[in-house]
Length: 317
Image 1: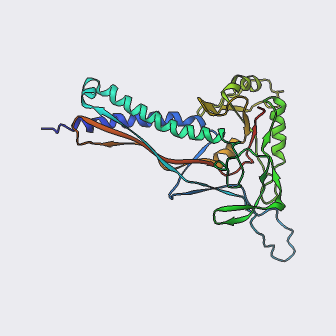
Image 2: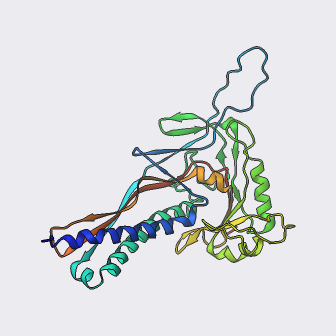
Image 3: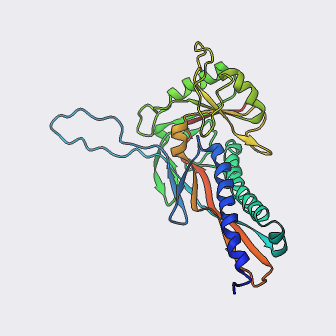
């Protein structure tokens, strides 16, 4: 005779499948410009640019170089969870519907938790309260990013004043000239070892309020989707022809008003990361109460940026 608790065992496969689909679908929204990594320790070091500089002429002697250091940002993942019970009566009335509903909603909650933290990373780019600074000691959007560091004292990196600073901020409202001006600005960036910072500022990030303007500037087919990147037939004489855009905002999070940014999306995925100790998943807890089946959504993660050269922020407000 089967156990009465068999109904709980049957539930899990429906909850789990719905959970996996919901969170994977939601997290794809920022995937073109935000990478993800798995961490195996309490803290994760996200490394910015660095290198050895230009080669020296060889004249029968060893040209021993030294590493010109960038900065490392320490990301400390944190745990998040939410538990929802499925009741026996509800499952008996609508087994497939009720269990899938719980799985889907928990999956969406887990995905949106990660998604909103990523949006807040962009929203806080200008925030100089000390809580949102990167490894170089300044906000992500700053007029005084140190180009290189002398090294570190513990986990604090010390800027090298001889290397100078750079700004990844522009004050102009979004326009073709503002975008091309930002591209020109990026072409002047140097790596910590004094080499040109090679980047392709190919992606526009905009607030929801600027989505219509972005479509007009770049062409109606330019919105960048995670699985669809069509060729635009927009006027090829446009100096920003072929550029794509992503709306980085929703609700009260992300870019707002006239905020925008220009970035190299390949470098963004390397230098802006969601760091997981545990990716979103759902656990089943078979309670002592035979009439309740508890499901817990769980994720252990953090978000952060390791460099600022690959993105230029525009905030005319």
